Image 1: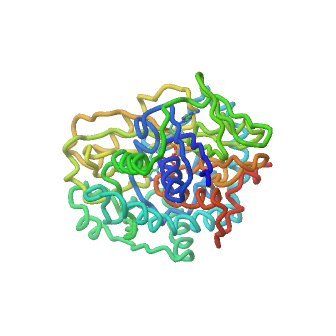
Image 2: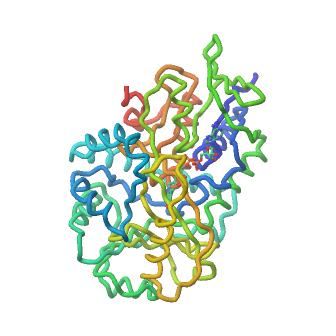
Image 3: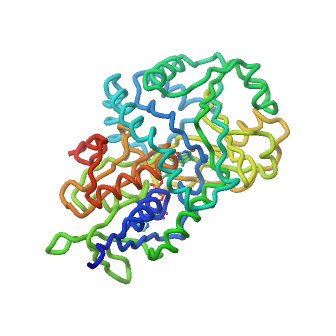
Length: 413
Ligand SMILES: Cc1cc2nc3c(=O)[nH]c(=O)nc-3n(C[C@H](O)[C@H](O)[C@H](O)COP(=O)(O)OP(=O)(O)OC[C@H]3O[C@@H](n4cnc5c(N)ncnc54)[C@H](O)[C@@H]3O)c2cc1C
C-alpha cells in the first residue's frame, strides 16, 4: 500500500520531533526549512531547560500590577520596542483577559497535562540516539532576594496542588549546591526532576540525522504560500516549486502566523523576543541551570561555556536586536559571578507566544489535512518530544486519553 505523505514546515524542535515520530509510524515524511536545522532558531539558542514543573503561566492576576515597574527597571527582564507597541495592542488586550485566576488555572492545568509527559516522551526518542554528556539530570534552581517577591507563594502553592516536586532552599543550601555564585540571594527553590541540555543544537541535529537515516527527506526552502487542492490536500509553494502532500504540519515557531493567516485562521500569535550570550570556558562555575528571579534571567552551564539567557522583549520579528538588552544580560551575569570578563555570541531569538500561554496543537479549523504545532512560548524545548508524539498520533488517527481540545486553534474563533 502507498504510504501517506506528510510535509512538515519548520525544522525546529517541534518539526524535527513530529517528523521523527511520523517516520517511525511508516509515513513518507518531508521536512522543509528555509535554513539548516538548528542554525539560528529558538530551538538552537534557548536556555536548554527541560522544565516539567513550569506549568504556572505568566498570565496571572498579579502580573499586571508589576508590568509598569518591570518596564522601567534597567536591570529587569521586560522590554518593549515602542515602534511595535501599536501592533501588539490586540495581543495585549487578549493577554489581559487571560489574567484572571480562572484563566490562569486553566492554562496551568493544561500545561501540566503535557509537561508531565514531556520527559518520558524525550526518553523514548533518546533511546535511539546517544545523548551521553548532552543531557544532565541535576535539577534547576530558582533564587531570589526578599525584595519584590510576593508571587513566590502563589506559584509554590499551585505546584503543590498539581503534585510537582519542589524543594525550598535556604541561602546556606543554595551555597552548598552552587558555591561559586555571589551570595546575593535570600531564598530559593530546587526542581529536582528538571534536566538541562548542554548543547540544544547538537541534540536537535542528532534527532534530525536519525530522521534522515530512517528515510526522511529534507528540503532547504522557504514556504511562501499554502493552498488546497480540490480534494483538500495541502499544497505548499516555494519560490521554485509546489509540493502537494496528503497532510501537512505548520511548525514554524514564531513565524507560523504568516501561513496560518492563509488558512483563514485568526490565531493571535506574536513573539516574546529573548537573548543569550556566552562566557566561554566558565561552565565549571555552575553544576546546573540557575535563574535569578528578581532580574528574570538565567545561566546554564553548556558546552559553549556559561550561556546567559533572558529578557522578554515585545518588538515583533523584524526589529533589530537591542544592544541595551545584551548589556543588561552581561551586567546581570557579572552581578552573580564577579570573575566573568568578555562575552561572545550575542543571539536574539523568538519565543512563539499566544496570549493565553497555551500552544496551538491540532488540526486547522477549516482544513482537515492541515495540522499545527507552535506557540509553546518559554517551554517549546521541553515540549518538543511530547508535541511530536501528540501531533503524529493525531495524523495517524490514534485514540488518546488526553483532553486536547484546549490546545485547538478554534479557541480563537
Ligand atoms: C531566549 C530563549 C530561551 C528559551 N529557553 C527555553 C528553555 O530553557 N526551555 C524551553 O523549554 N524552552 C525555551 N525557550 C523556548 C523554545 O526555545 C521555543 O519555544 C522552541 O524552540 C520553539 O520551537 P519551534 O520548533 O516551535 O520553533 P523554532 O525553533 O523557532 O523553529 C522554527 C523553524 O521554522 C523555520 N521557518 C519559519 N518560517 C518558515 C517558512 N515559511 N518556510 C520554511 N521554514 C520556516 C525557521 O527557519 C525555524 O528553523 C526559549 C526561547 C528563547 C527565545
